[in-house]
Structures are given as structure tokens and as C-alpha cells.
Length: 84
Image (cartoon, rainbow, N blue to C red; front, side, top):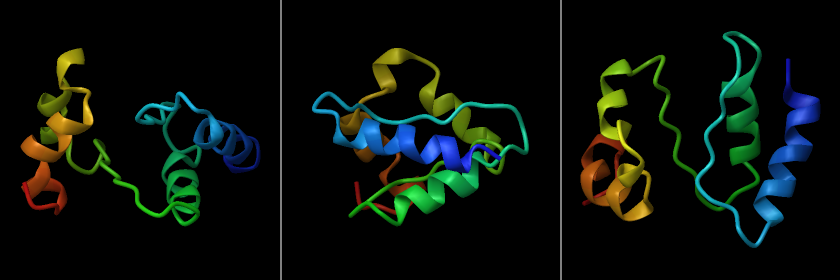
């Protein structure tokens, strides 16, 4: 499980003045989801999109241009439970 070492990295990311959207990438079954959810409890807001549970959502992020908050909220608003 990556929780112990990963939490420190996530806290450092959160406190960075240049933090960008976070994507957790690792091998399967190492604790990414648990780590993300635990870290999310420390934040005012967070969005979780689990591509293993919803592989059809991969197409929404098939280019770098789509990796902006404006795109996420306007295009995926209804998909992830936010009004567009």
C-alpha cells in the first residue's frame, strides 16, 4: 500500500503554489483509491473519476487540451454530478 509515503507527497502537492489537477497512477491494487479518498477528507472539495469503474470516461480525456478545469466542469458536469 502506498498510503504512508503517498500522503506526504499529496500534502506537499496541496501546499505548492503551482499545484495542478492530480492524477494518481500506479500498479493495480496498491491503494491509490484508498489514498485519494483519505486525502480527499482533508480538502474542502475534490472530484474522483475512477477509470477502472467507468472506462467509458477515458474518451473525455483523450487530449491535453481537455485537461482544464473549465473543460471538466462544462463538459463533465452532469457526468460527475455538478451542474454544467
